Length: 116
Image (cartoon, rainbow, N blue to C red):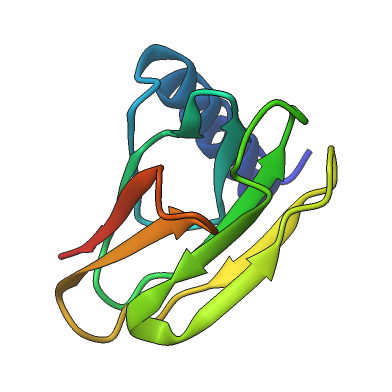
């Protein structure tokens, strides 16, 4: 196994461990960030991305008992449907430090992406 592949595997493992340990916040400097949408809203509810990093969020709705059947980024004028059990990628710009809010379609579940 190449050293690059080993490093990628180690990084992925650390991301999974960090995600499992901290359900409501996630920090990523590289790679996509997994976000679950269910009856509790979005988990993690807050994501921190490093300025200039890959700004990809992967939303997966895991329940029909939720109003989070779509994700809305008001500032970006972006709305994406979240089909049940299907990952949906959303790219967010990370060129400027800021906080981007995202919500469910009804605005009941409020979450954010902090770019710093």
